[in-house]
Length: 197
Image (tube, rainbow, N blue to C red):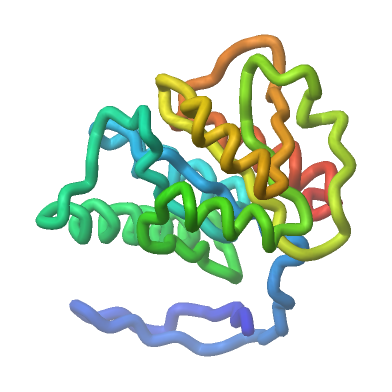
């Protein structure tokens, strides 16, 4: 439910609103799920922010083999909390009715399960022969986009994801940073499947 409101009062920690209109906002379909390799510094939060603004529905942190940073047990919850706060704040800023789900980190086995369950799964690869813009989009279900780390997806990970049903696709003639590839791919997918009209 989305409500359009008028601010009628404000005090520290309290905002009073008068509801003007309400409308039901159906859940997104197809859903865009981005498996995002864990990135250095604040690049992960940057990726989540931009993907949320674009319209990504689910973000799955992925500690791929070639990721330089590692979420250790003591810092993993803090890092995940930062991603979740970033997603929530970006959703508010972009006036989304549905906030993105930021899941816990998943290994390659968990990612392969998501790929198997998806209506379409694409492994972003700058060397892939097929352009993402040429891939037919399903009318519903999950569209999973796998974004590897700066060092690329390892051959073993490529084999595991391909065996699960992922199709390799490239974004364009230039190679994007891992922090921006998910947002660009999501924009192409959202446009192709009609969610961006």
